[in-house]
Amino acid sequence: MTSEEYLSRKGLEVQVPSFLDEVRLSGRVQGLWKIWGQDEDSAYGLGDIFEKKGFRILRWRLGVEARLFDHVLLEVSMGESEFLRTHDINLTDAMLTLDYLDFANLSIGAGKVPAGRQILTSSRDMQFIFRPVLSQQHIVPATEGDVTKYNGIGIPERDVGITVSGKISDGLFKYYAGIYNGKGEYFRGNIDGKYAYVVRAVVNPLGDLPDIEGDFFRDFRLSLGASGFSNHILDAKYLGWGIDAEIKGYGLSIRAEFMRSEQKPDFEGQSQAPIIKEKTYRDGFYVQAGYFVWPKYLELAYRYEQFDDNNHLTDNGDIKYHTVGLNWYVQRNHYYKVQLNYVVREEDGPALDNNGLYALLQAAF
Image (cartoon, rainbow, N blue to C red; front, side):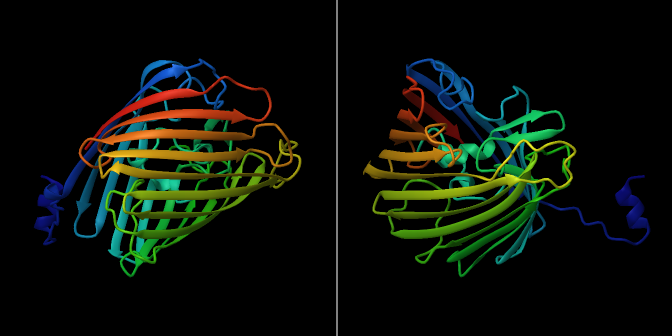
């Protein structure tokens, strides 16, 4: 006897969700070709994914969305990226969202942490092949023993937790607030018992603006955002904030973001001397612009960025990067595109011959 038959005999109605018409599959593959440049291993300090010439898979994703009943959305995806690479199936998102109210959605599970504008933009929808270093610093975990360490601003790109979000007046105002483990670990629980807290607010005075780079719609839009967070990593507490803005119209798009974090020793519960001895500050920003010289098909783009991993030290770890891009959107959207990027890298300290020319081919559905 099945469970449905047993419940029916007890006079209880069994309601099985019928969602086959509301299941959506998604996926993408990004193939990267480093065409030219020196084989330096230390340009980003993140291994050879950016530096070795030749072909590689930069990112891939495979996901499914299913609407259970009318206001319950299940999202699951897997894949690999330049920072999540074990040559195995990696869970990237596993989220259950209750969206009964536009102004108060509840999401539970693993997914993006709403700590900034660019980090919420899918790698599928970017104007450039690589994220700004400011955003990359969110997602550089290195596991050692029972802790997870981060290099950067101090908040993971993805984590497990609870997020409340919503929009008011058809997206004129949007907000996010969440609590997360803070370590980016999906299956190990909260390692140190301390949580990360994130808040974000966005104002779109001329109408809602999706997190998609480039102006495909050619109508004028303006968006202003601000974020804040706190987190604990190893023996340090991070307090961070950021502001961002985006303007789109008539084929031109401009996006800018600044983030800053304070890192200070946290002696509470420490059984050994802390690694962080004094308060330090980290900050960075980027400004990028794109213009469609052939509307919705051919786009020229440029980005300038800076990142300082310790404001108390001079000529140590500071970077300044210029990226020039050319994008061909095969079907007038991000799903099928060819991107060509030339990156000029300047670091304070020892000079590195690490400029590079890269091409990316994306196919997505």
